[in-house]
Length: 310
Length: 66
Image 1: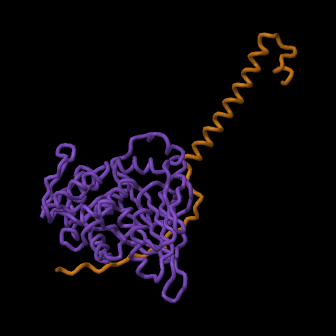
Image 2 (image 1 turned 180 degrees about the vertical axis):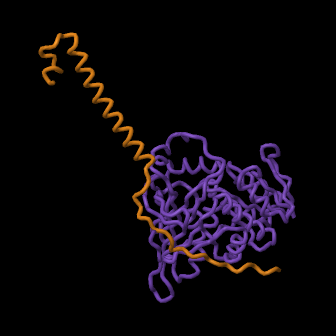
Image 3 (image 1 turned 180 degrees about the horizontal axis):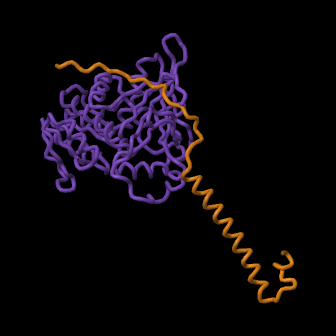
């Protein structure tokens, strides 16, 4: 079994390679070899900047499973449409195995398992990984943002919906706004009964004002400490309303690589079903995935509601 | 001073110079004020009550060796 890593020279790719050092890892560059040379039973990790669906289809034709790291809505929708092809190939396609989407879905499932009914899921994210991630982050504030609201998709203006979200330390409180990324789509796939799903990204005034312009300065090689916050609201077994919150404060590249590596290991062990899989799916071994992510250095935290004074 | 600025009792050649000097000073003051306000607005931080804490680590048991 070989792990094919696409985008191995990026921040996430390098960390995935390090996390999967116990496996045979080979790199694949679609610019030089459009047709992957994988074999049945292999696993491909797509961590490159461009859309993943065409290359994922190529790996499916070779019988290889695929783990994708991406947050583009159109690409995620195209990947979800590959379910039949991967089932026919006897392979698995994990759609969105990053920090968000990905770890956000796993944390949402962890919280949902503590409730009898899940009504709302709200995700907020702060920070970026490498330069491409920073550019995507920048553009997402200028596009339409999709949210699931009472049984229908609603298009919001990117950069609207300001909400102060509290992340674990050292990130703290950040103003977050609606943005264009795939989390609501994938969370709705995993939680079809949730009535409201939203996703926001942190931004400053300068980010919002310049979102429709090219980036004023070149992005850094890697962003600073990022954070993820997942809030699930619903009812417990006794009918009482509950609001559960978990969070992560970690380098986005590190958390993304840990999530992708955890999924890759499970795919390599044959523990995931055939066809498309999204993080947060009830059939996934969520606790085991979170344990593996935690073992790779990502600290998962739960909000207790008891803040401390400065 | 107003009479002086309006050119009353001052030769015509100096009237325009004095008025322009006043206009330039007003513009300079407005520009510096605006620049300072913009810098504070862009670079300034704060407004959030200083609080921290309220989070505790989650512990997921490590997987057993298969």
